[in-house]
Length: 84
View 1 (cartoon, rainbow, N blue to C red):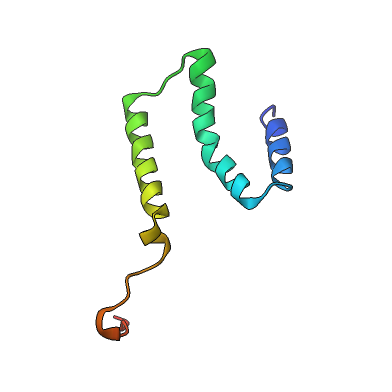
View 2: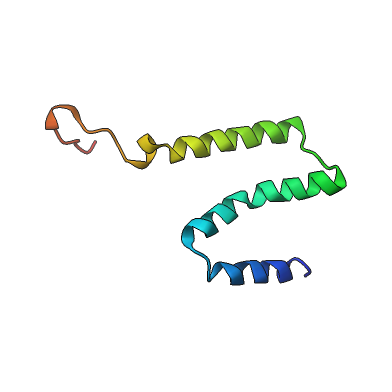
């Protein structure tokens, strides 16, 4: 029950936040949770969690790269792709 109160205020605040800022806040939330557990409580991550986090960061970086965002490469010769 106690977790609902902060989430209520968090999502209430997102209603008046720009989309870019809200997206960044959502993406940084897991990192901030790790930092808040690590610094005051000394709860670090296991090797498996670090590797998984690295994989997720790499996939996110790949998905956000200009080549991925722009769509597909144009077909050579101006031909259109046919359905298989």
